[in-house]
Image (cartoon, rainbow, N blue to C red; front, side, top):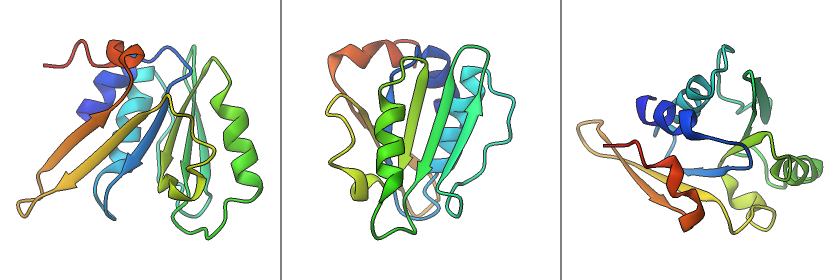
Length: 138
């Protein structure tokens, strides 16, 4: 959550995060941190059953998608595609394989690995234009 919060503080809008991990890996906790860092006061919960939750901050909107329970994205792929192009929106997608054709190449891929001691390791893959998200991390 702390890592997500630091990255959320740097968000400007237009960022897309694709989150990958096993069940219970920390994807929603990372998004909770993003929302807090962006200044949202909403309680962030897993959208596993609702598929999409929206959180607002003073200057940005966070759209949080979770496609875990779907075999096909259907109309939600259209909604995701619309949200991706809003300049004041940050998009976080859990279990994004089902919408891989919709996600832009210009995204931040976040891989969360959990070891035997329940510690998490984060790996980020992103284009140079997203370097500003990571500049304040130590």
